[in-house]
Image (cartoon, rainbow, N blue to C red; front, side, top):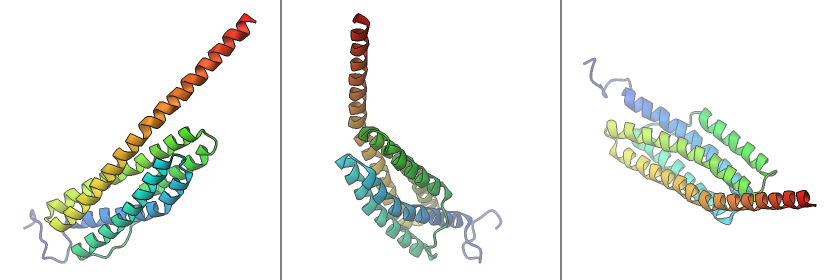
Length: 192
């Protein structure tokens, strides 16, 4: 029996063990985001970006609840494991907020979007892996919970991309306008 998975032994199935570890990591990551998202919303200038962060805060609170339900379904304790990756991403987000105070509103908001998308990409990866593990070990209800959260993370990422496009266009227009003013000033100075 060494080549098969023995779920009746005292040892946890290695794939289930890996799934539980991934879920503990995600639980800690989501907890950090519950604290970070209000700060990002406060730092955002564009009303739709503020709204997106606040909407995702509500979703993130739901993600925590889904994770707790997944642990329950797996017969495991919902115990977070420190997620060093999210700690780093949240720290970068704090730096982005501070640096944004010295930038134009558009540039600051684009920085916030970039920081938020890094978080979303991490979560998409984490939930995708966890969903695949749950599916592999036949945990259909857990798979469904994780798939639902994965869809919300992908939607949040897509929404941030959509928000960034008009901001980038505004930034490009402002830059082009500033560049033509500088060129006109140089011409006037040269002609004087």
